[in-house]
Image 1 (cartoon, helix red, strand yellow):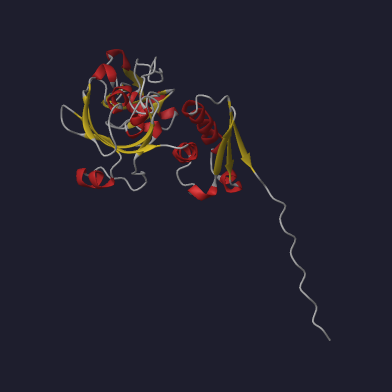
Image 2 (tube, one colour):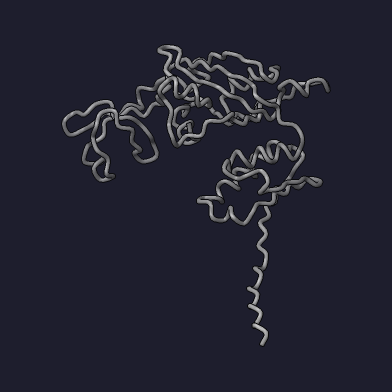
Length: 270
């Protein structure tokens, strides 16, 4: 599931960006155990408790078994900075104390997931208004109207009823989670953060380092051709400042070298 879809499913009155207050004291031995602010890779399968329907997952084989596989989706472990709500807070809380390879089932009630259903978010909209935006009045169609995303639940003469609640609102969610890796080392953390925002970029194509309070990321000039790269870079900077709390700034460097002039062909000797 892409980030935009995840925000649609979990949009609610709950502030998903709140940082947890306080830090837990840990010993040196805790390096092999997930702790607050750890950077970890996890795999998971999310289902609704009521009917067992899979709504989000990172495992390709499970996606195929469940009949929810999509060719254009990326199936790989998700990078999570524990305590920063890159995943649901209720799940991140349960990651603390887990070891690499450990599995856990986490049950998330509506108030900690997508929130309760709100009857006020079910609205009637004139078909004429939808037509102006090129939207067909078809039951079950997912639409974006103004700044809201919803689903047409019924067609009523000249109007339609649209449910702007999250599809998961009011539902208890069950996640089967497994910790795959705990990322350690400054350069490894930098690479993991960059790959989170630019997943197709090979590891050998970028470098990173930190000196004092400045994190520097060197990106190849090829990234200039990636669509919306500026938003990816903003995300990388924000993520790095979360991961490296001692840093005050992030610099991204792209180097363009002067192209070599074509060599003139040697003239044939007479």
